[in-house]
Length: 251
Length: 140
Image (cartoon, rainbow over all chains, first blue to last red; front, side, top):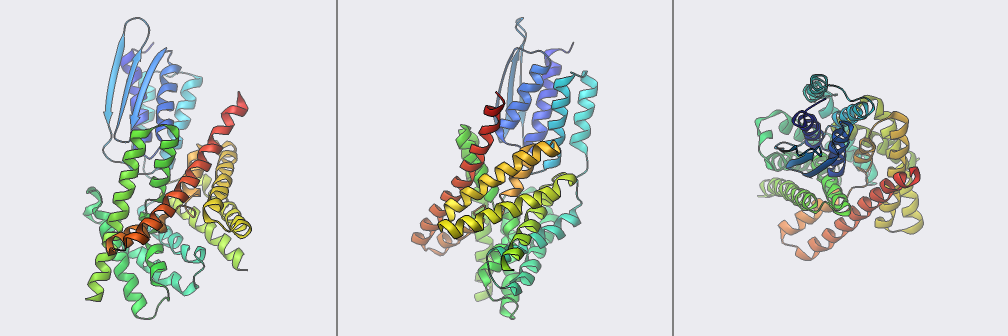
């Protein structure tokens, strides 16, 4: 039988992993509650925001515990979400002991990414240039879009700027804008805004905007506000970067 | 011919965004298929109705349904298919246009595209939320 402290440890660790890897609020809360209930805790309350997790449990015998976990960095890694999902399903069928559970979570948390950085950069450049076809523009625009996207990805993914919020987006917008303008000026491509928009597509916060509205529909208003704010700031940063490139070029 | 190229482009685009979001390897083909199906739905409903917001809504409902089915086949969370699947539909371009207009000082256009952006994003989110709410009801 695990102590309430140990149960909280497992639940908060699992919640931290999936929240930091881009899970929705309701999924994180649900996972935490399911793990606690699998260990026979009757009373669980969890409050999850994009920046932190609060869990409080009470086993009915006057023993209650609370934990707070702060989330600093967020990215999207769907493999880790599905691994934790599988873990929590396994745990509900047959509650494992503390050491095994922690070891398994540690393994998920430290696992390498499914795809290497180079593969991600090359594939995503190809994918975002496909946007030219979806926007029904002539196919010649694919080449400059591919080049601009590749340049932006290379600079942002490899350099040291990654650790500062919103700076990568400004740099990406700037580089993409510069390469697009250069190609356009020399006759490669015939629709400038399509090229720019396609090349910065991987940075555009469309998904966070949609997630923000989804959170609002679910009633997670704090998360909806903060995610919407984040999406807005990212869009502004990208636009500033592109505007800088346009300004540099035309003066 | 043009439509087939577009469907193929949607396939590649959703698949590569799956790679960007580090989706499990075994889900990639079905991810691409989700993109193709939703883009076909988008093209068809845009042709029939002629409204981007409603077309986005219908296409997102298709994404949600595909996600629910494929997630059960592959035993993965639905999010894997939904996050990458809505990529061709999300209003990234209007969102970017809005900010560019506002920075250039063209406030009227900025507000107009801003409202467009929110309408499309809202339609997508609502469709995904509606589809996600149905399976638990069927089970119980």
